[in-house]
Image 1 (cartoon, rainbow, N blue to C red):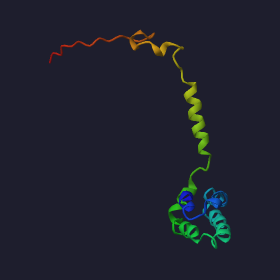
Image 2 (cartoon, rainbow, N blue to C red):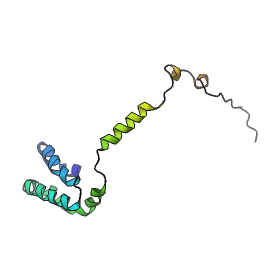
Image 3 (cartoon, rainbow, N blue to C red):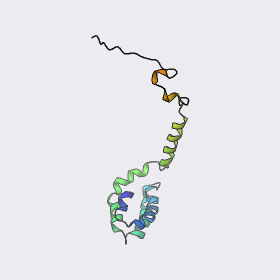
Image 4 (cartoon, helix red, strand yellow):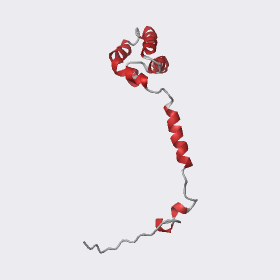
Length: 116
């Protein structure tokens, strides 16, 4: 919804619109979101009526998203990167050797004759 809102706005107003819409989509309840949207509408409807219309028309589809946790999604990405660095990596230089020569690896030879 936020990205679609920018289609109807001048680029110079994007940051202000994003700042004013954030309380709408991060509201703890539908009523709080309606109150924040009313404040947004008062400020921006004269200049960008299409944005207000966009949110009004999509309100029923938007409301269920208010039930999701509003935690920062960047925290999840940070946790994943942190876990990746915690994985056990082979000692330096072991990656460059062929697979059968790596410590702890078994060498499996496949025969060329396949008997069925």
